[in-house]
Picture 1 (cartoon, rainbow, N blue to C red):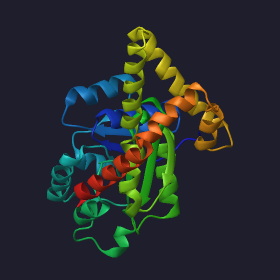
Picture 2 (picture 1 turned 45 degrees about the horizontal axis):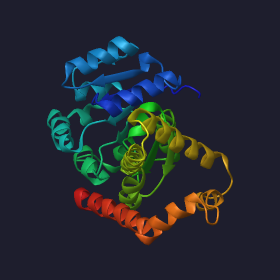
Picture 3 (picture 1 turned 180 degrees about the vertical axis):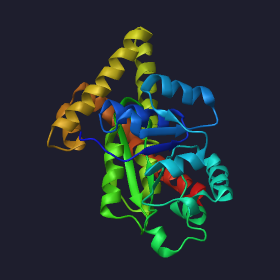
Picture 4 (picture 1 turned 120 degrees about the vertical axis):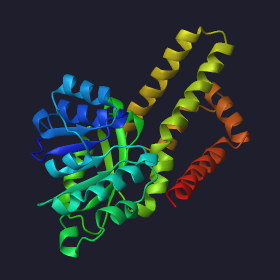
Length: 284
């Protein structure tokens, strides 16, 4: 992956911020000298400085003034406080040049950021401060993430390209409309939990069938991992792969019959739709 030459600043040094910083450096997408971070928890920023040699800045204002790309890697409940601090410091009126703002705060629409960042800013300057929203998921922590990305009206194709390159360092990324972000949240954002739920059930079943807990866990994890790799490397659908494993009158067919008789597929669909609705409710 070719190197980005923008200075990238992280407001927040939690798990996802740490994952992104690590991914950018490991992929050689960014040099440590081009990465900056601030967080109220000093031990987290100190650890990042010691591990990667990045620069710790004193506050959000310093990150905005120093960096070309600013990533809000904070929890949703902290967004208002962070944006209020930025507004109170009037730091945005002191900035010059292009500033790309990227939020990874779940369930937080771009209009919230626009309300603070664009307050009192003329249209011409807004075009120099595009806002993008990202929904990553936890596999990003091991560079196997899936992120959904949308941008506001002031973002150019080049701005989106830069954001995609940053996100690609920790996995895959798709572009979408903000109206689709609740669905993205329900499918990929919450999706790892559905997978872990299935793993829990398969492990419990294996134990009931007499397999040791250790072997049950290893067997289940390896089976799911192998199945996903197989799906990625085949040119056929998941349904077709499932049918290939399901021989008439065989063991798999007996299991699938129980799932179908209990409408498991329909229940999963309902669950994902419920997650999307909850995301919509939370984002207002």
